[in-house]
Length: 471
Image 1 (tube, rainbow, N blue to C red):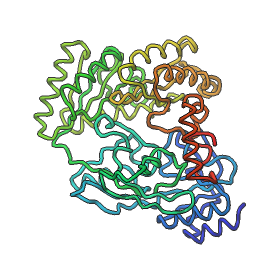
Image 2 (image 1 turned 180 degrees about the vertical axis):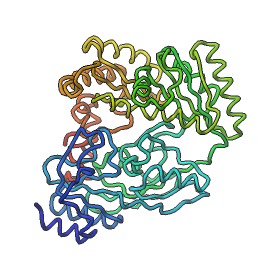
Image 3 (image 1 turned 90 degrees about the vertical axis):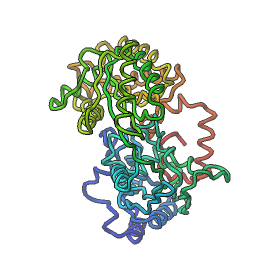
Image 4 (image 1 turned 120 degrees about the vertical axis):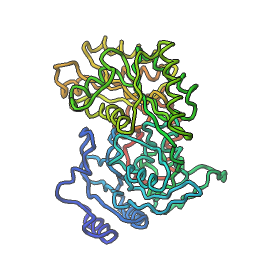
C-alpha cells in the first residue's frame, strides 16, 4: 500500500474522507453489478482546490484516478480495476448550486449535484432544466456531462452537451481550467468544453458546470398510443413533428415484450393498450400558450394518426398524476428486465428512417442464432436511440446465457449497427464494457486523433486508464 500517498491525501481533504478499509462496495462495484474492482482508496474532496491537490499528489506518485459521481453508469466506466492501485475520486461532497442567473437563463453548479436536485432548484426559481433520466434521483451532473447523457427530452432540448455552456475542469497535471462562462457565443479558438464532455473522465475531471435553463411551459401533456409496427411508429413521429413542432419534447417507443415485463413484475402498475399491439409510443407535448391549446394539438395529431392507420388506439393523460403513471411505466422497463434475469444491454443509435429495417433484420438474425431469444426493445425513437436489449430464452439460465452468448449477441447487434451506419453507444458511453467493440467499429483515423488528444492532455495516462479506448 502506498502509505505516503494516503497520508498526503488525508492531509488534503481530511482522514475521514480517505477510505481504504471496510466495505467500499458502493464505490468499487457498478450499478449493474457487472464489474467489481479494488481501490487503493476512495477520496472525497469538498472543493475544486482539493481535487487539484489530489490530482497533483497522484500524478507525482504515478497513481491513476477514477472520477466518480453517482456511480449509476451502465458500461463500467466509473469503477476501479482489480489492481488495488487506483484512487477513486468521488465528487459527491461537491454538490453546491453556486449561482442562478435568471436574466441569462443559466445556473452554475458543482459536479456532485444530483440531477433531480438541479431540476427541483430550477423549478422553484420558475425555470426548467430539461435533462431527464430514469436515474435522476442518484446520478450527478458531472457524470451526466462526462458521458454526454441523453434521456427522454433529447428530441427537443438535445443531449447534456447541448445543455452546458461552460465547465470548470481539473487537468491531468492538477491545474484548474476556469471555463464557467455563461456565454452562448465565444468563438476564440478550440472548444475545450466539448473535449471534456463525453470523455468519461479520461482527459480531466469536471468539477463544475454552467448549464442552460428554459422557461417553464404553460402546459405539458402526455399521450400513450398503440402502433402496429415500428414503421408506423416512425410515421407517427413524422406526424408529431408536423403537428407539434418544437412542442414535441418526448417520443418513446416500447415493444410489447418490454411492456409485458412491467405488467408481470409490477402488477400494481396499469400498462395500457399493450396486449394487442406490437409497440406502444409515449409522446409528450410542451406548450407555451395554454393547456387547451396543447390538448387541441394532441387531438388533431391523434385524429390524423388514427385516420392514416399508424395508431390503432390512444389515451391522453387527463392530469399530472396520470402523466406520471404513464412515464413510470416507461421508466420501469429496465427494472422489470432486471427482475426477469440477467440480460445483454445495448444502447445504439440509427438514423430514424432506417430503424424499422434495422429492427426487422436484427430481430431475424438473433432469432436464427439463438432460438427463443427474447428482445426487450424500447427507447428514444424521437432521436434515433434504441435500448435494444436481449433476454435469455424463457426458462433458461440467465448466468449461463450471459457467459455463453454475450459475445455472439454483441457481434450480431453491433455488426448490424455498422451496416446501418449507426453508433454502438448513443448515450451510455464506452467505459470498459465496449472497449474492444469500439476498436473494431470506430474508424482508425478517429481513434488516432482521440489517442493524440489523450496523449496531449494526459501524457502520464493517469486519468481513468482503460476506458473509452486502448492506450
